[in-house]
Image (tube, rainbow, N blue to C red):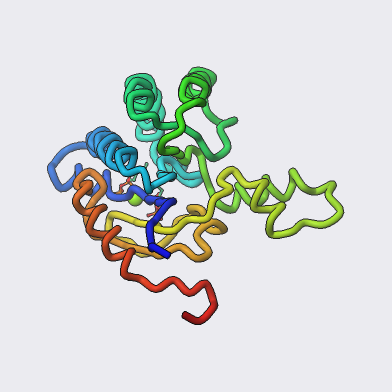
Length: 225
Ligand code: IPE
Ligand code: IPE
Ligand code: MG
């Protein structure tokens, strides 16, 4: 069986530090980070053996940041989705948000919904953006949705999550070695890769190098090979 990562998840970290190191404001880092999102999504869309790319864009904890940064991120997201709709369609990419969208403004929810509907029939890569996403929040919402069931199984809980797909390869940029509440359930048997590269400097070449390393790993899932 070939060891191809069909579902790649990325914790896109390091925008702020990258910008600060250039003497620029943190928001400039987010702006450049959005360009990396486009480049990495396009790379994955061109590789038909990658089915799904899940990207951590805004966590349930990121609301703690200064209001000005949060507002900038909301505007950037809106602008990005508006301008990228054609990229999704050209690349046959389906956009699927995960997270609790109810806390976003009406206009942001509308654009999220519009892009999701516009790309609903795309059957290439699925790009899943984690927006106001926290793994604990996702699990609690799933358990609440199942609370009238007689019993909850791994399968029923898994199917009630926003993201119902196990991760093969999980990458975090920015040098820290933690999951920060991202897809904890789905990462149960993911291969974890950490790179010091800050997200605005992460490239398709580096992703390719990581995928090559991934392919050499023996995944045992608790068994013996
Ligand atoms: C990741 O970059 C993007 C978001 C969390 C929105 P950061 O903004 O966390 O950048 P650093 O980690 O402070 O450098
Ligand atoms: C994780 O990065 C969240 C996103 C990439 C959206 P953070 O910068 O928020 O994580 P911590 O605070 O360093 O754990
Ligand atoms: Mg960070």
